[in-house]
Length: 120
Length: 107
Image 1 (cartoon, rainbow over the protein chains, first blue to last red):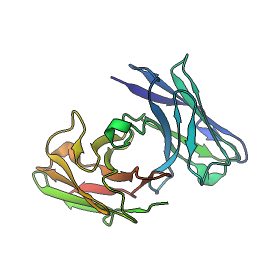
Image 2 (tube, rainbow over the protein chains, first blue to last red; image 1 turned 90 degrees about the vertical axis):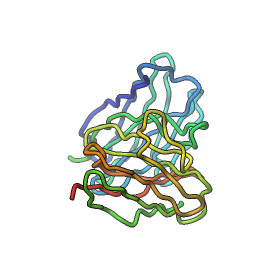
Image 3 (cartoon, helix red, strand yellow; image 1 turned 120 degrees about the vertical axis):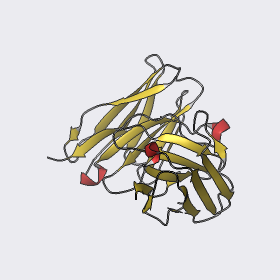
């Protein structure tokens, strides 16, 4: 069964770049889209963007100028970079498989999430 | 962006109850609606996709209905493990958006 695990620093300074990696186990990164989703404290979930295993991307316009999602098929990983972070970027960051075409463009499975705090 | 509204931020219910959680889209989204269960420190879990399709492995006490702008998630016969936060999500158009979540609490 496919499992996802986020990794990366839990603390990032304001104006710096947040970098996270999602490692996929129990399955291949091939033939799927892969997404990053976040949840700021006390707020709802926010879709950040997705990447296809071949490298094509689609980002949330609200974050597009600061986001880069990349894929490394040799390592079965995909990554998130979010630049010029502020306290508003403090959130639990999730990686997920999806949107999945045959499942109504839903997301499944998800990683457990990792808290990233932006603070000096 | 399509706004997704879950009118109830929290609900109280007892084990064995039948509970309905609602989600409204700001415009018609057809049946491009998914429901997720979230628990602290755990990976969110897909319950329902395409408004009414039960994800493999999810107990049959969970069901979804609706199309267009109004959707419901029903849990028939609440179990202790069902007390969690439930979120809806539209995938009709980019950017994909989620409801704020409804926290189901024990009465």
